[in-house]
Image (cartoon, rainbow, N blue to C red; front, side, top):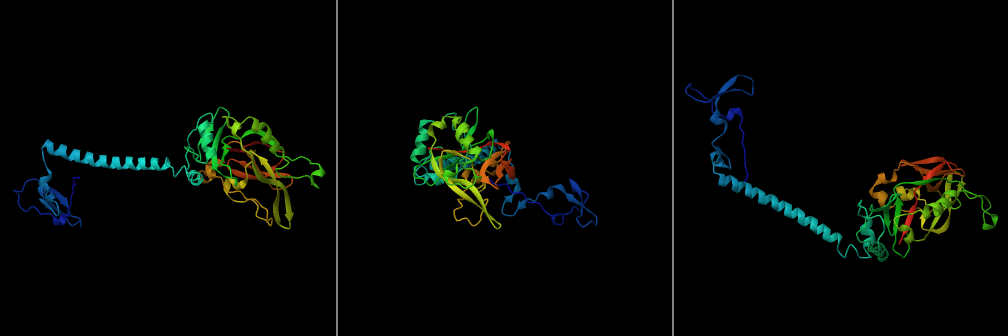
Length: 333
């Protein structure tokens, strides 16, 4: 490609006009402020420039030379475009290659890529097949199914330590309104006092009842039960607080602080604290935690208090008798 070099000179390096016969004189003020000089205009552009040659050679009125230079520039730009396009094609090949869709690699690869694309209003047979085979073809964190009721966003692939492949979803918009409050359980079930955690909470009954029945986009037909621990009670020893847990089996449940932030809420002396890893969606997009409505989490802080997420912040003094929305985790597979 042609290169144009322009050289400028200090005023001290220009030839000063000394006679009245010189034409095209310019009056130039000296840089040191001591006066002016008369300079020939033609001397402002030196005839010869180092490593370039005669500057006049760059001047031409021949249209064929101008056209040649423009064509040369066009072809160079075309090369840049071609290389960029090839790089894009190479990336598309990698994303569509067998390596990415290998069941041994797909989980990690797809959890590492964030994309926000609609997957339709109904889950398709080939999509559920890709989930069950563990290839997760053409699905990435942030992709979603949407209907007039809600948007169900992919939050993680193969999140739970089970042998079956699965996808964890979360609603973009919290639904409904319910208390967190807990209810009495018969002492025959082994409890000497009223449990205060998520296990026997009103919010759990609401999620596994009304919310589950209204899951849209055909996802309700592919719900997958997983076994996991939920808060049962809160025990205090000196200045430490720690949870007690019970295992439940369900396909829908309230998220925990750890799932949203990756940081455990309590770190007391309970060896059985189950701290879930942060969901990939919130690792990629912190703002996805925020919603207009306040929604309940699994975590409790006292006999009468539980944690709710309010516009991306956690309210640690929410009374369990307050009514907030729910934004459950949904497992399909």
